[in-house]
Length: 212
Image (cartoon, rainbow, N blue to C red; front, side, top):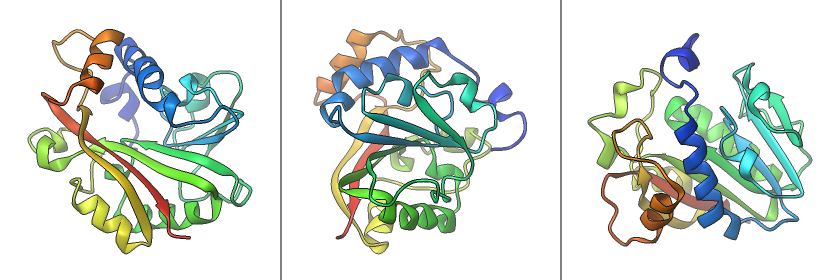
């Protein structure tokens, strides 16, 4: 991220907290056992990891101020998401990255995939939530730090090319942003997740794991 990014483009927003609380309650908690070790890559304000209930919660981000936003009990590490040497091998059960890989080069993305190969447990998965260029192309480069472009097709091909098995793909998992005139509430998030129709769905969700 460039200097000033969190003051200009990604400012704190209470609506983001509401969305992530609901996403945990209505979706992610079903995927994460309470005895799991969870790693949040590019943690930002901690909206995901702060809501997680797990035996161990770890967050990493290059932004030096992010530990101020993580809850007590979250192990906050300031550093590169491609440098995971501080983690024990095969100890992470659920790795999560929200709106991260569009900010990295393909070479950096590949480095993260390789690093995770050694850190994910036998049951471990990588779970990616990020803009789907096929549906978000009009707004994609409104964020001046976006440097890589992925659709739900290209990101799957990229991961397969780097020896990952893609378990599921949701091309229209969620709307792109909370910055809209639409109200934000837990019941609306729950209804959206349950609906087969995804109006404004511009973020994709990928579940994958390294080939063993």
